[in-house]
Length: 336
Image (cartoon, rainbow, N blue to C red; front, top):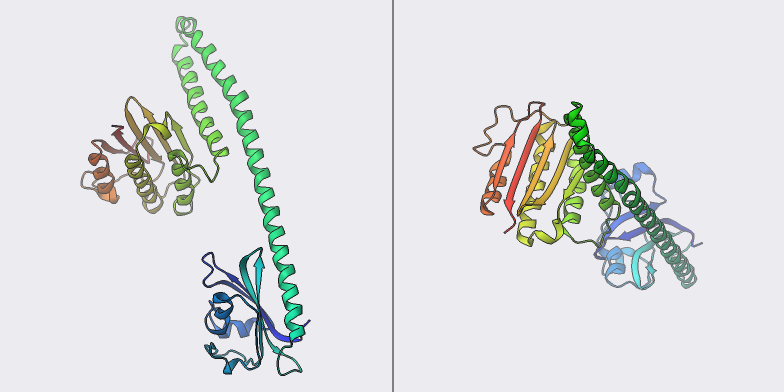
Protein backbone atom coordinates (compact mmCIF):
# COMPACT_ATOMS: atom_id res chain seq x y z
CA UNK A 1 0.00 0.00 0.00
CA UNK A 2 2.73 2.45 0.93
CA UNK A 3 5.92 0.91 -0.56
CA UNK A 4 7.50 0.91 2.91
CA UNK A 5 10.70 -1.12 3.19
CA UNK A 6 10.14 -1.93 6.86
CA UNK A 7 7.03 -2.28 9.01
CA UNK A 8 6.20 -3.12 12.62
CA UNK A 9 3.25 -3.58 14.93
CA UNK A 10 3.84 -2.47 18.49
CA UNK A 11 1.35 -3.87 21.03
CA UNK A 12 0.97 -1.86 24.25
CA UNK A 13 1.18 -3.36 27.73
CA UNK A 14 -1.79 -3.29 30.13
CA UNK A 15 -0.67 0.02 31.64
CA UNK A 16 -0.58 1.58 28.14
CA UNK A 17 2.83 3.15 28.81
CA UNK A 18 5.21 0.85 26.91
CA UNK A 19 5.39 -1.80 24.20
CA UNK A 20 4.81 -5.38 25.32
CA UNK A 21 5.25 -6.87 21.83
CA UNK A 22 7.05 -5.66 18.69
CA UNK A 23 6.36 -7.63 15.51
CA UNK A 24 8.38 -6.69 12.42
CA UNK A 25 8.28 -7.12 8.66
CA UNK A 26 11.25 -6.53 6.34
CA UNK A 27 14.05 -7.66 8.65
CA UNK A 28 15.69 -11.06 8.17
CA UNK A 29 15.88 -13.26 11.29
CA UNK A 30 19.66 -12.87 11.53
CA UNK A 31 19.26 -9.08 11.32
CA UNK A 32 16.79 -9.11 14.21
CA UNK A 33 19.10 -11.28 16.32
CA UNK A 34 22.00 -8.96 15.62
CA UNK A 35 20.01 -5.90 16.71
CA UNK A 36 19.25 -7.43 20.10
CA UNK A 37 16.28 -6.80 22.43
CA UNK A 38 13.05 -5.48 20.92
CA UNK A 39 12.22 -1.81 21.54
CA UNK A 40 9.93 -0.96 24.44
CA UNK A 41 8.71 2.40 23.17
CA UNK A 42 11.40 5.05 23.54
CA UNK A 43 12.04 8.02 21.27
CA UNK A 44 9.90 8.41 18.16
CA UNK A 45 8.17 5.07 18.80
CA UNK A 46 7.08 6.33 22.20
CA UNK A 47 5.66 9.54 20.79
CA UNK A 48 2.60 7.64 19.57
CA UNK A 49 2.22 6.10 23.04
CA UNK A 50 2.15 9.44 24.88
CA UNK A 51 0.19 11.20 22.12
CA UNK A 52 -1.74 8.66 20.01
CA UNK A 53 -1.99 10.73 16.82
CA UNK A 54 -0.58 9.93 13.33
CA UNK A 55 3.07 10.98 12.93
CA UNK A 56 4.75 11.52 9.54
CA UNK A 57 8.48 12.38 9.45
CA UNK A 58 10.75 12.94 6.46
CA UNK A 59 14.09 12.35 8.24
CA UNK A 60 14.05 10.40 11.51
CA UNK A 61 17.47 11.69 12.56
CA UNK A 62 16.20 15.28 12.50
CA UNK A 63 13.15 14.74 14.70
CA UNK A 64 13.49 16.17 18.25
CA UNK A 65 12.07 12.99 19.86
CA UNK A 66 14.50 10.61 18.16
CA UNK A 67 16.48 8.29 20.43
CA UNK A 68 18.88 6.83 17.86
CA UNK A 69 19.28 3.27 16.59
CA UNK A 70 21.05 0.39 18.38
CA UNK A 71 24.14 -1.25 16.93
CA UNK A 72 23.61 -3.40 13.81
CA UNK A 73 20.29 -1.65 13.07
CA UNK A 74 19.76 -0.94 9.36
CA UNK A 75 19.59 2.77 8.40
CA UNK A 76 16.07 4.21 8.22
CA UNK A 77 15.08 7.66 7.03
CA UNK A 78 11.38 8.35 6.49
CA UNK A 79 8.77 7.36 9.10
CA UNK A 80 4.99 6.96 9.36
CA UNK A 81 3.26 5.96 12.60
CA UNK A 82 -0.46 5.44 13.17
CA UNK A 83 -2.24 4.28 16.37
CA UNK A 84 -4.60 1.29 16.37
CA UNK A 85 -7.63 1.91 18.54
CA UNK A 86 -10.18 -0.60 19.80
CA UNK A 87 -13.17 1.64 20.43
CA UNK A 88 -11.52 4.56 22.25
CA UNK A 89 -8.73 2.48 23.76
CA UNK A 90 -5.29 2.42 22.12
CA UNK A 91 -4.24 -1.18 21.46
CA UNK A 92 -0.93 -0.51 19.73
CA UNK A 93 0.75 1.30 16.85
CA UNK A 94 1.65 0.64 13.23
CA UNK A 95 5.16 1.82 12.37
CA UNK A 96 6.40 2.12 8.75
CA UNK A 97 9.84 3.33 7.61
CA UNK A 98 11.75 4.01 4.38
CA UNK A 99 9.27 4.63 1.59
CA UNK A 100 10.92 3.08 -1.49
CA UNK A 101 11.35 5.55 -4.36
CA UNK A 102 10.21 8.59 -2.34
CA UNK A 103 11.87 10.90 0.15
CA UNK A 104 8.98 10.58 2.60
CA UNK A 105 5.51 9.16 3.12
CA UNK A 106 2.61 11.15 1.72
CA UNK A 107 -0.71 12.32 3.07
CA UNK A 108 -2.37 9.60 0.97
CA UNK A 109 -0.14 7.02 2.67
CA UNK A 110 -1.23 8.36 6.04
CA UNK A 111 -4.91 8.09 5.04
CA UNK A 112 -4.46 4.52 3.76
CA UNK A 113 -2.63 3.33 6.86
CA UNK A 114 -5.19 5.14 9.04
CA UNK A 115 -7.97 3.17 7.31
CA UNK A 116 -5.99 -0.04 7.85
CA UNK A 117 -5.62 0.81 11.55
CA UNK A 118 -9.40 1.31 11.83
CA UNK A 119 -10.01 -2.07 10.17
CA UNK A 120 -7.46 -3.69 12.48
CA UNK A 121 -9.22 -2.18 15.50
CA UNK A 122 -12.55 -3.61 14.34
CA UNK A 123 -10.97 -7.04 13.78
CA UNK A 124 -9.40 -7.00 17.26
CA UNK A 125 -12.71 -6.01 18.86
CA UNK A 126 -14.51 -8.80 16.97
CA UNK A 127 -11.88 -11.30 18.14
CA UNK A 128 -12.36 -10.14 21.73
CA UNK A 129 -16.15 -10.49 21.43
CA UNK A 130 -15.78 -14.01 20.00
CA UNK A 131 -13.43 -14.91 22.84
CA UNK A 132 -15.91 -13.54 25.39
CA UNK A 133 -18.72 -15.52 23.77
CA UNK A 134 -16.64 -18.69 24.00
CA UNK A 135 -15.89 -18.00 27.65
CA UNK A 136 -19.60 -17.51 28.38
CA UNK A 137 -20.36 -20.80 26.63
CA UNK A 138 -17.69 -22.57 28.70
CA UNK A 139 -19.08 -21.11 31.94
CA UNK A 140 -22.60 -22.20 30.97
CA UNK A 141 -21.39 -25.74 30.24
CA UNK A 142 -19.49 -25.86 33.54
CA UNK A 143 -22.55 -24.57 35.42
CA UNK A 144 -24.79 -27.18 33.77
CA UNK A 145 -22.29 -29.94 34.59
CA UNK A 146 -22.07 -28.76 38.20
CA UNK A 147 -25.87 -28.82 38.54
CA UNK A 148 -26.05 -32.31 37.01
CA UNK A 149 -23.37 -33.60 39.38
CA UNK A 150 -25.13 -32.13 42.39
CA UNK A 151 -28.68 -33.08 41.43
CA UNK A 152 -27.94 -36.64 40.35
CA UNK A 153 -24.60 -38.13 41.35
CA UNK A 154 -24.30 -36.67 44.87
CA UNK A 155 -27.94 -37.35 45.72
CA UNK A 156 -27.64 -40.96 44.60
CA UNK A 157 -24.42 -41.43 46.57
CA UNK A 158 -26.05 -39.91 49.63
CA UNK A 159 -29.05 -42.23 49.31
CA UNK A 160 -26.71 -45.21 48.87
CA UNK A 161 -24.82 -44.22 52.03
CA UNK A 162 -28.07 -44.04 54.02
CA UNK A 163 -29.11 -47.44 52.70
CA UNK A 164 -25.80 -48.98 53.74
CA UNK A 165 -26.05 -47.40 57.18
CA UNK A 166 -29.50 -48.89 57.65
CA UNK A 167 -27.99 -52.32 56.97
CA UNK A 168 -25.35 -51.92 59.69
CA UNK A 169 -27.16 -54.11 62.20
CA UNK A 170 -27.57 -57.07 59.84
CA UNK A 171 -24.00 -56.66 58.55
CA UNK A 172 -22.58 -56.71 62.08
CA UNK A 173 -24.47 -59.92 62.79
CA UNK A 174 -22.98 -61.47 59.65
CA UNK A 175 -19.47 -60.35 60.53
CA UNK A 176 -19.32 -57.73 57.75
CA UNK A 177 -19.57 -54.64 59.95
CA UNK A 178 -16.02 -53.29 59.31
CA UNK A 179 -16.37 -53.69 55.53
CA UNK A 180 -19.70 -51.88 55.55
CA UNK A 181 -18.32 -49.06 57.73
CA UNK A 182 -15.39 -48.70 55.34
CA UNK A 183 -17.76 -48.50 52.35
CA UNK A 184 -19.83 -45.75 54.03
CA UNK A 185 -16.67 -43.78 54.84
CA UNK A 186 -15.54 -44.11 51.21
CA UNK A 187 -18.88 -42.77 50.01
CA UNK A 188 -18.62 -39.82 52.40
CA UNK A 189 -15.13 -39.02 51.10
CA UNK A 190 -16.35 -39.29 47.48
CA UNK A 191 -19.18 -36.86 48.24
CA UNK A 192 -16.71 -34.37 49.75
CA UNK A 193 -14.46 -34.60 46.70
CA UNK A 194 -17.39 -34.21 44.32
CA UNK A 195 -18.57 -31.12 46.19
CA UNK A 196 -15.11 -29.58 45.72
CA UNK A 197 -15.19 -30.42 42.01
CA UNK A 198 -18.66 -28.88 41.71
CA UNK A 199 -17.44 -25.75 43.47
CA UNK A 200 -14.46 -25.39 41.11
CA UNK A 201 -16.69 -25.93 38.08
CA UNK A 202 -18.92 -23.08 39.21
CA UNK A 203 -16.04 -20.85 40.31
CA UNK A 204 -16.27 -17.47 38.56
CA UNK A 205 -13.51 -14.87 38.37
CA UNK A 206 -15.71 -12.49 40.34
CA UNK A 207 -15.96 -14.88 43.30
CA UNK A 208 -13.91 -13.30 46.09
CA UNK A 209 -14.64 -15.78 48.92
CA UNK A 210 -11.96 -17.67 50.82
CA UNK A 211 -12.76 -20.91 49.01
CA UNK A 212 -12.11 -19.11 45.73
CA UNK A 213 -8.90 -17.66 47.15
CA UNK A 214 -7.63 -21.11 48.15
CA UNK A 215 -8.47 -22.63 44.76
CA UNK A 216 -6.87 -19.78 42.82
CA UNK A 217 -3.74 -19.89 45.01
CA UNK A 218 -3.30 -23.65 44.59
CA UNK A 219 -3.75 -23.40 40.83
CA UNK A 220 -1.16 -20.61 40.70
CA UNK A 221 1.32 -22.76 42.66
CA UNK A 222 0.89 -25.92 40.57
CA UNK A 223 3.63 -24.95 38.05
CA UNK A 224 6.02 -24.54 41.01
CA UNK A 225 4.96 -27.87 42.54
CA UNK A 226 4.92 -29.70 39.22
CA UNK A 227 1.66 -31.43 40.12
CA UNK A 228 -2.08 -31.00 39.85
CA UNK A 229 -3.18 -30.67 43.49
CA UNK A 230 -6.76 -31.69 44.40
CA UNK A 231 -8.43 -29.38 46.94
CA UNK A 232 -11.33 -30.49 49.13
CA UNK A 233 -13.49 -28.43 51.49
CA UNK A 234 -15.84 -29.30 54.29
CA UNK A 235 -17.86 -26.88 56.41
CA UNK A 236 -18.74 -23.16 56.20
CA UNK A 237 -15.37 -21.94 54.86
CA UNK A 238 -16.56 -18.57 53.52
CA UNK A 239 -18.81 -17.58 56.40
CA UNK A 240 -17.04 -18.86 59.52
CA UNK A 241 -13.45 -17.66 59.00
CA UNK A 242 -12.35 -14.09 59.68
CA UNK A 243 -10.33 -12.04 57.20
CA UNK A 244 -7.24 -12.20 59.44
CA UNK A 245 -7.45 -15.98 59.78
CA UNK A 246 -7.97 -16.26 56.02
CA UNK A 247 -4.78 -14.29 55.34
CA UNK A 248 -2.77 -16.58 57.65
CA UNK A 249 -4.39 -19.62 56.07
CA UNK A 250 -3.47 -18.58 52.51
CA UNK A 251 0.09 -17.77 53.57
CA UNK A 252 0.37 -21.18 55.23
CA UNK A 253 -0.88 -22.99 52.13
CA UNK A 254 1.54 -21.03 49.94
CA UNK A 255 4.56 -21.85 52.09
CA UNK A 256 3.61 -25.48 52.67
CA UNK A 257 3.00 -26.22 48.98
CA UNK A 258 6.16 -24.36 47.99
CA UNK A 259 8.03 -26.68 50.38
CA UNK A 260 6.47 -29.67 48.63
CA UNK A 261 7.63 -28.37 45.26
CA UNK A 262 11.17 -27.58 46.43
CA UNK A 263 11.98 -30.49 48.70
CA UNK A 264 9.52 -33.39 48.58
CA UNK A 265 10.06 -34.78 45.07
CA UNK A 266 6.45 -35.92 45.33
CA UNK A 267 4.22 -37.41 42.64
CA UNK A 268 1.01 -36.61 44.52
CA UNK A 269 -0.17 -33.92 46.92
CA UNK A 270 -3.57 -33.00 48.36
CA UNK A 271 -5.05 -30.08 50.28
CA UNK A 272 -8.01 -30.51 52.63
CA UNK A 273 -9.63 -27.60 54.48
CA UNK A 274 -12.28 -28.32 57.11
CA UNK A 275 -14.26 -26.05 59.43
CA UNK A 276 -15.97 -27.88 62.30
CA UNK A 277 -16.33 -27.78 66.09
CA UNK A 278 -15.10 -24.19 66.25
CA UNK A 279 -11.79 -24.94 64.53
CA UNK A 280 -10.22 -24.48 61.13
CA UNK A 281 -8.24 -27.57 60.17
CA UNK A 282 -5.84 -27.57 57.21
CA UNK A 283 -4.17 -30.80 56.12
CA UNK A 284 -1.63 -31.03 53.29
CA UNK A 285 -0.35 -34.49 52.37
CA UNK A 286 2.26 -35.63 49.85
CA UNK A 287 3.93 -38.90 48.91
CA UNK A 288 7.43 -37.46 48.67
CA UNK A 289 10.70 -38.19 50.48
CA UNK A 290 9.29 -37.53 53.92
CA UNK A 291 10.89 -35.65 56.79
CA UNK A 292 14.01 -37.79 57.11
CA UNK A 293 16.33 -36.18 59.63
CA UNK A 294 14.82 -32.71 59.32
CA UNK A 295 14.44 -30.93 62.64
CA UNK A 296 10.77 -30.00 62.41
CA UNK A 297 10.66 -28.85 66.03
CA UNK A 298 13.37 -26.32 65.26
CA UNK A 299 11.69 -25.16 62.10
CA UNK A 300 13.38 -27.14 59.34
CA UNK A 301 12.11 -26.65 55.77
CA UNK A 302 10.73 -23.25 56.76
CA UNK A 303 8.18 -24.78 59.13
CA UNK A 304 8.99 -22.19 61.81
CA UNK A 305 6.90 -19.59 60.01
CA UNK A 306 3.94 -21.96 59.80
CA UNK A 307 4.23 -22.82 63.48
CA UNK A 308 4.42 -19.14 64.47
CA UNK A 309 1.31 -18.37 62.42
CA UNK A 310 -0.57 -21.17 64.17
CA UNK A 311 0.61 -20.08 67.63
CA UNK A 312 -0.31 -16.45 66.92
CA UNK A 313 -3.88 -17.67 66.38
CA UNK A 314 -3.69 -19.96 69.48
CA UNK A 315 -3.45 -23.04 67.29
CA UNK A 316 -1.03 -25.88 66.56
CA UNK A 317 1.11 -27.26 63.77
CA UNK A 318 1.89 -30.97 63.52
CA UNK A 319 4.09 -32.47 60.82
CA UNK A 320 4.36 -36.24 60.57
CA UNK A 321 5.75 -38.95 58.32
CA UNK A 322 3.02 -41.60 57.85
CA UNK A 323 4.02 -45.26 57.71
CA UNK A 324 3.08 -45.32 54.03
CA UNK A 325 5.65 -42.58 53.35
CA UNK A 326 5.54 -38.92 52.45
CA UNK A 327 4.63 -36.05 54.75
CA UNK A 328 1.42 -34.98 56.43
CA UNK A 329 1.14 -31.37 57.64
CA UNK A 330 -1.75 -30.52 59.96
CA UNK A 331 -2.37 -26.86 60.84
CA UNK A 332 -5.28 -26.24 63.21
CA UNK A 333 -6.49 -22.99 64.79
CA UNK A 334 -9.66 -21.96 66.64
CA UNK A 335 -12.10 -19.86 64.65
CA UNK A 336 -12.49 -17.33 67.46
